[in-house]
Length: 205
Image 1 (cartoon, one colour):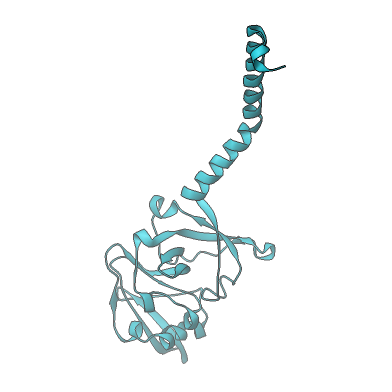
Image 2 (image 1 turned 60 degrees about the vertical axis):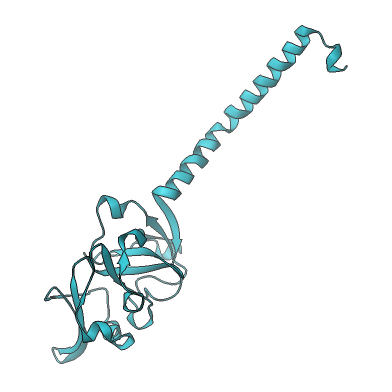
């Protein structure tokens, strides 16, 4: 039967059934739409997975580690010394550790401490211990780039000096300069995968 041959009552019944079916379909999928909405919001503004690429943060982080990037922490509690951060660069995102805060005067020296050759970090005239580094990695800080070890560097206002824990194999502020606050995407400390490495990275600040 064509639509033109339907009575007014039959047309109204069809319209009501169509509207009811559409409403039922919307109500059925609404929980999924809400979930998708909140997932998008969380990923955009709160937290999102991030993958470690390369060995620049070894042994603290390993190539292939999947971590959670917290996007709000830099605005809520600020960025602290020795935080692990994700930074935006022209060549892609990098994961590094914050060494120098805005206004800090930092310098590295290779010297003998207790008859052992090591690298020593000085910030604002005081020695700061880097417990997350082995002696060889401390020495590697200077072997990769001597600038930080030949002169005192002042971190500009609103910027950060970052380095990888694998000092002799890391592209960081020694090469690319200090990082503006706006280019810090957030902090990360929780390893999600692989499961045998699941957990928070030890904090040192």
